[in-house]
Length: 575
Ligand code: ARG
Image (cartoon, rainbow, N blue to C red; front, side, top):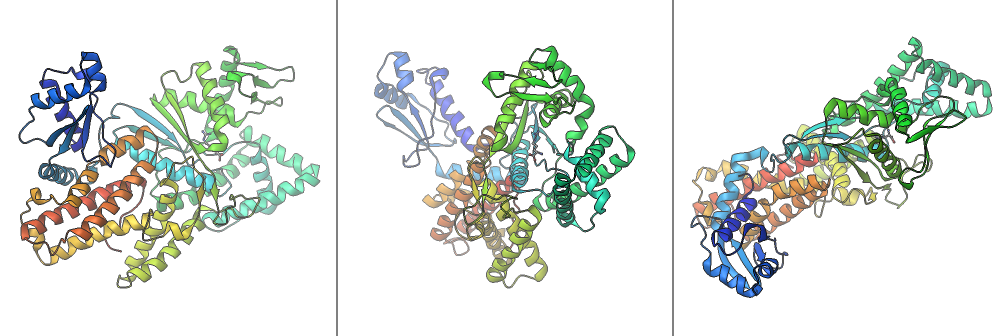
């Protein structure tokens, strides 16, 4: 069993069933609110009603009839009116939790509930010839966390980077490169130059119909597979992916596929025909293919009157392809809130077309990013933040924190720690709350060494590791431990919380909510802080207690590192 609390619940359920006084299907156990001093409760209302007795009477009868395994996880059983309350046995809790974390190590929290299920996660999806903006950053970070979480739950996860690498605007990209040449440089700088060049051409084309026509011809050449157009296009795709890859590497992001919108071009005619055949779309007199009044949503196009296709058309083909190729049970779109209608229309359309009969389609939407002055980031406003500069900025600020907090570290390690802390701050800022909520870029809060920040969590982990290093130096870690000595209330609280990681991972997966794991990490760090304040570790009263506390510190470090790693955040050994 990879979950101590699930084991506890199963033990209590078995004991209740064994009384013969209540059938299994009437047993619903609940985890009481934090202010109730028990660990598991059986509210007997429903069962008592079904059995025709009064709830307090049933609770009392069950308490009298119960026999619990002598070496099990259950400590005391009490009744409180209609409630039958069970508390964990502190000694056995300590032994069970620490043994499990030791045995499973980097896999503690992982489980198999998703085994046999396949999930496609559509995330990151930058647009070619442009830098990733904050929307893509959010998608990349949230998407990777969801991939990590579902892999930990045993799902087969296929990440797909649905690159914006197709559409009319490529005519302008290619025409501008023909006119102004190919910009040189590295990373996002060269993309920025390409964006500027694009903007100049687009502005000039507004005033000069010849330029506009020229861009249109380039876009036609590209669609018709003209080798020169194709080569230039490929160059811009490679340039974009190169810049993206540098950022992905820093963020620990790895996406299995990047088919991109262009991949679906050959499948679009079939998709349009299928929509017409299903009667969900019709061709207007002018030639455009229209979907009208689908689930009372606004009208949208699958084909323009000039024969051109749309983002939507490619998304329909994408689902058709993914279902055939991967047979997924789930497809998850990590895309900003502004595309909610687009995705609702898409999902409704493919349902009508019968393309995703047994696949659950989910939009994980996320909110807007604001600067520290409370303004939404936008290219037009000129306060847009790009990923490479965001990460560089975060790392140089983190470097200052590291210099101040850990001046003794060697220079190379300082830089590695600053990278982990800076990148961690950016990642955590995207994950610590519900993705639907808007976000602020507030460096003070993001890099705070106290409070709900990655930095604080990383410090807590590094603190654990430092205690263990000091113990190893003076040899006390070598003592045999007696885990059953860990019965101080703050030890028990920490242990109970460590035991909750598997449940937090399940909930994060089910709700597509990495913040559930972030919350778990934050509470872990706080509970550890309380324990460390109240229970001397290196100076514990006896060698056995010191060894047991060191084991708890080691278990905390392992579990916290696992939680952070699911979020995509590194946990340095020293800070
Ligand atoms: N490239 C798109 C954008 O930048 C996001 C693509 C999201 N995925 C999808 N299958 N539509 O807005």
